[in-house]
Image 1 (tube, rainbow over the protein chains, first blue to last red):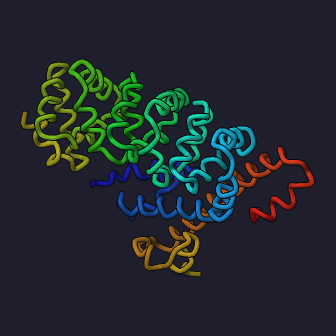
Image 2: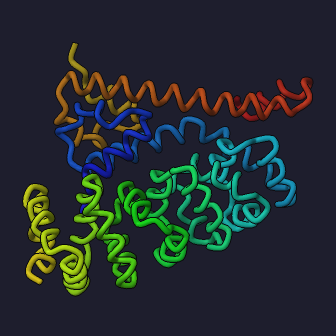
Length: 261
Length: 73
Protein backbone atom coordinates (compact mmCIF):
# COMPACT_ATOMS: atom_id res chain seq x y z
CA UNK A 1 0.00 0.00 0.00
CA UNK A 2 1.23 3.48 -0.85
CA UNK A 3 1.31 5.75 2.16
CA UNK A 4 0.33 9.26 1.16
CA UNK A 5 2.65 11.66 2.94
CA UNK A 6 0.23 14.62 3.13
CA UNK A 7 -2.51 12.42 4.64
CA UNK A 8 -0.10 11.04 7.20
CA UNK A 9 1.19 14.50 8.11
CA UNK A 10 -2.39 15.65 8.79
CA UNK A 11 -2.95 12.63 11.04
CA UNK A 12 0.33 13.10 12.91
CA UNK A 13 -0.48 16.79 13.44
CA UNK A 14 -3.77 15.75 15.07
CA UNK A 15 -1.99 13.36 17.44
CA UNK A 16 0.52 16.06 18.40
CA UNK A 17 -2.17 18.77 18.68
CA UNK A 18 -0.20 20.89 16.20
CA UNK A 19 -0.83 22.56 12.90
CA UNK A 20 0.73 20.46 10.13
CA UNK A 21 2.59 23.58 8.95
CA UNK A 22 4.64 23.56 12.15
CA UNK A 23 5.93 20.05 11.43
CA UNK A 24 8.19 21.17 8.59
CA UNK A 25 11.17 19.80 10.53
CA UNK A 26 9.87 16.33 9.58
CA UNK A 27 10.28 17.05 5.85
CA UNK A 28 13.07 14.44 5.48
CA UNK A 29 10.61 11.67 6.44
CA UNK A 30 8.46 9.95 3.81
CA UNK A 31 4.83 8.90 4.28
CA UNK A 32 5.65 5.45 5.63
CA UNK A 33 8.13 6.87 8.13
CA UNK A 34 5.60 9.46 9.31
CA UNK A 35 3.07 6.66 9.75
CA UNK A 36 5.60 4.67 11.82
CA UNK A 37 6.30 7.73 13.95
CA UNK A 38 2.59 8.46 14.53
CA UNK A 39 1.90 4.86 15.44
CA UNK A 40 4.86 4.84 17.86
CA UNK A 41 3.66 8.07 19.52
CA UNK A 42 0.11 6.74 19.94
CA UNK A 43 1.41 3.51 21.49
CA UNK A 44 3.62 5.50 23.84
CA UNK A 45 0.71 7.65 25.00
CA UNK A 46 -1.55 4.63 25.50
CA UNK A 47 1.09 2.56 27.27
CA UNK A 48 1.81 5.28 29.81
CA UNK A 49 -1.55 4.69 31.52
CA UNK A 50 -2.02 1.11 30.26
CA UNK A 51 -1.61 -0.70 33.62
CA UNK A 52 -4.14 1.62 35.26
CA UNK A 53 -6.73 1.07 32.54
CA UNK A 54 -6.16 -2.66 32.59
CA UNK A 55 -6.92 -2.68 36.33
CA UNK A 56 -9.98 -0.47 35.88
CA UNK A 57 -11.33 -2.68 33.09
CA UNK A 58 -10.60 -5.79 35.14
CA UNK A 59 -12.42 -4.40 38.17
CA UNK A 60 -15.58 -3.99 36.12
CA UNK A 61 -15.63 -7.61 34.95
CA UNK A 62 -18.03 -8.82 37.62
CA UNK A 63 -20.66 -6.13 36.99
CA UNK A 64 -23.47 -6.82 34.50
CA UNK A 65 -22.91 -5.17 31.11
CA UNK A 66 -25.80 -2.77 31.61
CA UNK A 67 -24.41 -1.53 34.93
CA UNK A 68 -20.87 -1.24 33.50
CA UNK A 69 -22.23 0.78 30.58
CA UNK A 70 -24.07 3.04 33.02
CA UNK A 71 -20.88 3.56 35.04
CA UNK A 72 -18.91 4.34 31.87
CA UNK A 73 -21.41 6.92 30.78
CA UNK A 74 -22.20 8.57 34.11
CA UNK A 75 -18.93 8.23 36.00
CA UNK A 76 -15.91 7.37 33.87
CA UNK A 77 -16.72 9.49 30.82
CA UNK A 78 -15.56 9.02 27.22
CA UNK A 79 -11.76 9.32 27.65
CA UNK A 80 -11.53 6.65 30.36
CA UNK A 81 -14.08 4.44 28.61
CA UNK A 82 -12.12 4.56 25.35
CA UNK A 83 -8.90 3.64 27.14
CA UNK A 84 -10.55 0.82 29.11
CA UNK A 85 -12.07 -0.56 25.91
CA UNK A 86 -8.67 -1.87 24.77
CA UNK A 87 -8.58 -4.15 27.83
CA UNK A 88 -12.23 -5.24 27.74
CA UNK A 89 -13.16 -8.56 26.07
CA UNK A 90 -14.63 -7.84 22.66
CA UNK A 91 -18.01 -9.52 23.22
CA UNK A 92 -18.45 -7.53 26.44
CA UNK A 93 -17.42 -4.22 24.87
CA UNK A 94 -19.89 -4.81 22.03
CA UNK A 95 -22.66 -5.69 24.47
CA UNK A 96 -21.96 -2.53 26.48
CA UNK A 97 -22.11 -0.38 23.34
CA UNK A 98 -25.74 -1.41 22.90
CA UNK A 99 -26.47 0.54 26.12
CA UNK A 100 -24.69 3.73 25.04
CA UNK A 101 -26.42 6.56 23.17
CA UNK A 102 -24.93 7.87 19.92
CA UNK A 103 -23.63 11.06 21.52
CA UNK A 104 -21.55 9.14 24.06
CA UNK A 105 -20.40 6.64 21.41
CA UNK A 106 -19.23 9.53 19.23
CA UNK A 107 -17.28 11.00 22.17
CA UNK A 108 -15.66 7.61 22.81
CA UNK A 109 -14.80 7.28 19.11
CA UNK A 110 -13.02 10.66 19.22
CA UNK A 111 -10.81 9.31 22.03
CA UNK A 112 -10.07 5.91 20.50
CA UNK A 113 -7.07 4.82 18.48
CA UNK A 114 -8.73 2.75 15.71
CA UNK A 115 -5.64 0.53 15.28
CA UNK A 116 -6.15 -0.69 18.85
CA UNK A 117 -9.89 -1.31 18.44
CA UNK A 118 -9.87 -3.45 15.29
CA UNK A 119 -11.51 -6.53 16.87
CA UNK A 120 -14.30 -4.40 18.34
CA UNK A 121 -14.83 -2.68 15.01
CA UNK A 122 -15.17 -6.10 13.38
CA UNK A 123 -17.82 -7.22 15.86
CA UNK A 124 -19.79 -4.04 16.44
CA UNK A 125 -23.11 -4.11 14.49
CA UNK A 126 -23.22 -1.54 11.73
CA UNK A 127 -26.64 -0.35 12.92
CA UNK A 128 -25.02 0.91 16.13
CA UNK A 129 -22.36 2.70 14.05
CA UNK A 130 -24.75 4.54 11.71
CA UNK A 131 -25.97 7.18 14.21
CA UNK A 132 -22.39 7.59 15.47
CA UNK A 133 -21.28 8.28 11.89
CA UNK A 134 -23.99 10.92 11.57
CA UNK A 135 -22.86 12.55 14.84
CA UNK A 136 -19.22 12.66 13.73
CA UNK A 137 -20.30 14.07 10.40
CA UNK A 138 -22.38 16.79 12.10
CA UNK A 139 -19.42 17.79 14.25
CA UNK A 140 -17.01 17.77 11.29
CA UNK A 141 -14.74 15.12 12.84
CA UNK A 142 -13.42 14.02 9.46
CA UNK A 143 -10.04 13.06 10.92
CA UNK A 144 -11.76 10.60 13.26
CA UNK A 145 -13.84 9.16 10.42
CA UNK A 146 -10.80 8.85 8.17
CA UNK A 147 -8.90 6.90 10.81
CA UNK A 148 -11.80 4.49 11.33
CA UNK A 149 -12.23 4.08 7.57
CA UNK A 150 -8.79 2.47 7.44
CA UNK A 151 -9.55 -0.07 10.16
CA UNK A 152 -13.22 -1.00 9.79
CA UNK A 153 -14.16 -4.03 7.67
CA UNK A 154 -14.69 -2.74 4.13
CA UNK A 155 -18.32 -3.87 3.94
CA UNK A 156 -19.12 -1.82 7.03
CA UNK A 157 -17.41 1.23 5.53
CA UNK A 158 -19.56 0.78 2.43
CA UNK A 159 -22.73 0.79 4.52
CA UNK A 160 -21.62 3.73 6.66
CA UNK A 161 -20.69 5.79 3.60
CA UNK A 162 -24.40 5.78 2.74
CA UNK A 163 -24.82 8.18 5.65
CA UNK A 164 -22.61 10.75 3.88
CA UNK A 165 -24.67 12.63 1.34
CA UNK A 166 -22.37 15.51 0.44
CA UNK A 167 -19.57 14.48 -1.97
CA UNK A 168 -17.35 17.15 -0.39
CA UNK A 169 -17.67 15.32 2.94
CA UNK A 170 -16.57 12.08 1.28
CA UNK A 171 -13.42 13.87 0.16
CA UNK A 172 -12.88 15.43 3.59
CA UNK A 173 -12.99 11.96 5.17
CA UNK A 174 -10.76 10.56 2.44
CA UNK A 175 -8.17 13.25 3.20
CA UNK A 176 -7.58 11.53 6.56
CA UNK A 177 -7.82 7.94 5.30
CA UNK A 178 -4.67 6.20 4.22
CA UNK A 179 -6.43 3.33 2.44
CA UNK A 180 -7.08 5.19 -0.83
CA UNK A 181 -7.53 1.80 -2.55
CA UNK A 182 -10.51 1.17 -0.30
CA UNK A 183 -12.00 4.63 -0.94
CA UNK A 184 -11.41 4.02 -4.66
CA UNK A 185 -13.37 0.73 -4.65
CA UNK A 186 -16.20 2.32 -2.69
CA UNK A 187 -16.28 5.38 -4.96
CA UNK A 188 -16.26 3.16 -8.05
CA UNK A 189 -19.44 1.62 -6.66
CA UNK A 190 -21.27 4.96 -6.93
CA UNK A 191 -23.88 5.28 -9.67
CA UNK A 192 -23.10 7.71 -12.52
CA UNK A 193 -25.06 10.59 -10.96
CA UNK A 194 -23.23 10.33 -7.65
CA UNK A 195 -19.85 9.95 -9.36
CA UNK A 196 -20.64 13.01 -11.49
CA UNK A 197 -21.43 15.04 -8.36
CA UNK A 198 -18.19 13.81 -6.80
CA UNK A 199 -16.17 14.94 -9.84
CA UNK A 200 -17.95 18.32 -10.06
CA UNK A 201 -17.14 19.02 -6.41
CA UNK A 202 -13.51 17.98 -6.86
CA UNK A 203 -12.94 20.24 -9.84
CA UNK A 204 -14.77 23.22 -8.36
CA UNK A 205 -12.73 23.12 -5.13
CA UNK A 206 -8.99 23.16 -5.83
CA UNK A 207 -8.26 21.83 -2.34
CA UNK A 208 -10.03 18.56 -3.24
CA UNK A 209 -8.38 18.00 -6.61
CA UNK A 210 -5.31 16.28 -5.21
CA UNK A 211 -7.47 13.99 -3.06
CA UNK A 212 -9.69 12.95 -5.95
CA UNK A 213 -6.58 12.31 -8.05
CA UNK A 214 -5.20 9.98 -5.37
CA UNK A 215 -8.51 8.14 -5.16
CA UNK A 216 -8.81 7.83 -8.96
CA UNK A 217 -5.18 6.66 -9.17
CA UNK A 218 -6.07 3.81 -6.81
CA UNK A 219 -9.00 2.68 -9.01
CA UNK A 220 -8.91 -0.31 -11.37
CA UNK A 221 -8.24 0.68 -15.02
CA UNK A 222 -11.87 0.08 -16.09
CA UNK A 223 -13.13 2.31 -13.27
CA UNK A 224 -10.60 4.98 -14.29
CA UNK A 225 -11.99 4.84 -17.84
CA UNK A 226 -15.54 5.27 -16.51
CA UNK A 227 -14.40 8.23 -14.37
CA UNK A 228 -12.69 9.77 -17.43
CA UNK A 229 -15.86 9.43 -19.53
CA UNK A 230 -17.98 11.05 -16.85
CA UNK A 231 -15.38 13.81 -16.39
CA UNK A 232 -15.45 14.57 -20.13
CA UNK A 233 -19.25 14.68 -20.00
CA UNK A 234 -19.00 17.49 -17.46
CA UNK A 235 -16.15 19.47 -19.01
CA UNK A 236 -13.47 18.14 -21.39
CA UNK A 237 -11.05 20.74 -20.00
CA UNK A 238 -11.08 19.06 -16.59
CA UNK A 239 -8.82 16.20 -17.61
CA UNK A 240 -6.20 18.68 -18.83
CA UNK A 241 -6.20 20.26 -15.37
CA UNK A 242 -6.02 16.83 -13.79
CA UNK A 243 -3.02 15.94 -15.98
CA UNK A 244 -1.10 19.03 -14.83
CA UNK A 245 -1.64 18.04 -11.23
CA UNK A 246 -0.80 14.39 -11.91
CA UNK A 247 2.48 15.44 -13.51
CA UNK A 248 3.35 17.64 -10.56
CA UNK A 249 2.45 14.91 -8.04
CA UNK A 250 4.12 12.05 -9.92
CA UNK A 251 0.79 10.26 -10.42
CA UNK A 252 0.85 9.96 -14.22
CA UNK A 253 1.68 6.24 -14.27
CA UNK A 254 -1.03 5.41 -11.77
CA UNK A 255 -3.57 7.42 -13.77
CA UNK A 256 -2.59 6.03 -17.17
CA UNK A 257 -6.00 4.45 -17.91
CA UNK A 258 -7.74 7.70 -16.92
CA UNK A 259 -5.65 9.80 -19.31
CA UNK A 260 -5.56 7.21 -22.12
CA UNK A 261 -9.38 6.90 -22.20
CA UNK B 1 24.70 19.46 22.71
CA UNK B 2 23.90 16.81 20.10
CA UNK B 3 20.73 14.84 20.63
CA UNK B 4 21.39 11.11 20.54
CA UNK B 5 18.96 8.60 19.08
CA UNK B 6 18.80 6.96 22.51
CA UNK B 7 17.02 10.07 23.82
CA UNK B 8 14.49 10.05 20.97
CA UNK B 9 13.89 6.33 21.43
CA UNK B 10 13.29 6.78 25.16
CA UNK B 11 10.79 9.58 24.51
CA UNK B 12 8.97 7.18 22.20
CA UNK B 13 9.13 4.34 24.72
CA UNK B 14 11.16 2.05 22.51
CA UNK B 15 14.73 1.08 21.60
CA UNK B 16 16.97 2.93 19.11
CA UNK B 17 16.84 0.06 16.61
CA UNK B 18 13.07 0.62 16.29
CA UNK B 19 13.49 4.26 15.29
CA UNK B 20 16.46 4.04 12.92
CA UNK B 21 14.35 5.84 10.30
CA UNK B 22 14.58 9.00 12.44
CA UNK B 23 18.38 9.15 12.15
CA UNK B 24 17.90 11.26 9.02
CA UNK B 25 16.69 14.17 11.21
CA UNK B 26 19.30 16.77 12.04
CA UNK B 27 19.92 18.06 15.54
CA UNK B 28 17.44 20.94 15.28
CA UNK B 29 14.71 18.62 13.98
CA UNK B 30 15.40 16.13 16.78
CA UNK B 31 15.14 18.93 19.33
CA UNK B 32 11.79 20.07 17.93
CA UNK B 33 10.51 16.50 17.82
CA UNK B 34 11.43 15.99 21.49
CA UNK B 35 9.61 19.22 22.35
CA UNK B 36 6.47 18.18 20.45
CA UNK B 37 6.55 14.73 22.05
CA UNK B 38 6.80 16.25 25.51
CA UNK B 39 3.90 18.63 24.76
CA UNK B 40 1.75 15.73 23.49
CA UNK B 41 2.62 13.59 26.50
CA UNK B 42 1.80 16.41 28.93
CA UNK B 43 -1.51 17.17 27.16
CA UNK B 44 -2.48 13.49 27.19
CA UNK B 45 -1.56 13.09 30.86
CA UNK B 46 -3.51 16.21 31.82
CA UNK B 47 -6.53 14.96 29.85
CA UNK B 48 -6.49 11.53 31.52
CA UNK B 49 -5.86 12.97 34.98
CA UNK B 50 -8.72 15.47 34.70
CA UNK B 51 -10.99 12.67 33.48
CA UNK B 52 -9.95 10.57 36.50
CA UNK B 53 -10.60 13.49 38.86
CA UNK B 54 -14.07 13.94 37.43
CA UNK B 55 -14.75 10.22 37.82
CA UNK B 56 -13.52 10.14 41.43
CA UNK B 57 -15.71 13.12 42.27
CA UNK B 58 -18.65 10.72 41.94
CA UNK B 59 -17.15 8.45 44.60
CA UNK B 60 -17.66 9.11 48.35
CA UNK B 61 -14.69 11.09 49.69
CA UNK B 62 -13.58 8.36 52.12
CA UNK B 63 -13.24 5.82 49.32
CA UNK B 64 -11.23 8.02 46.96
CA UNK B 65 -7.80 7.50 48.50
CA UNK B 66 -8.01 3.68 48.72
CA UNK B 67 -9.38 3.50 45.19
CA UNK B 68 -6.62 5.73 43.86
CA UNK B 69 -4.10 3.47 45.58
CA UNK B 70 -5.77 0.34 44.22
CA UNK B 71 -5.66 1.60 40.64
CA UNK B 72 -2.29 3.27 40.94
CA UNK B 73 -3.60 6.74 40.10
